[in-house]
Image (cartoon, rainbow, N blue to C red; front, side, top):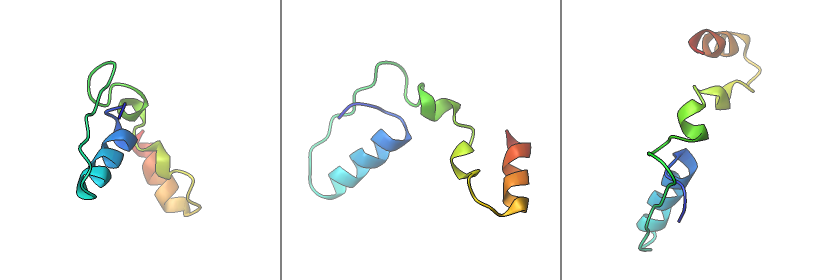
Length: 59
């Protein structure tokens, strides 16, 4: 498995829970790529105005 960011680690955990042996490899430090820079942007697509405002403020 390649990538120690959010998606890579979630996938690794899921595979381990299913009995697989997993090795996580990343080019840099854990979450040093896009996961480390996301600042919670993933949920800003919701249409609730209050939640959008909270996330914009957090960024």
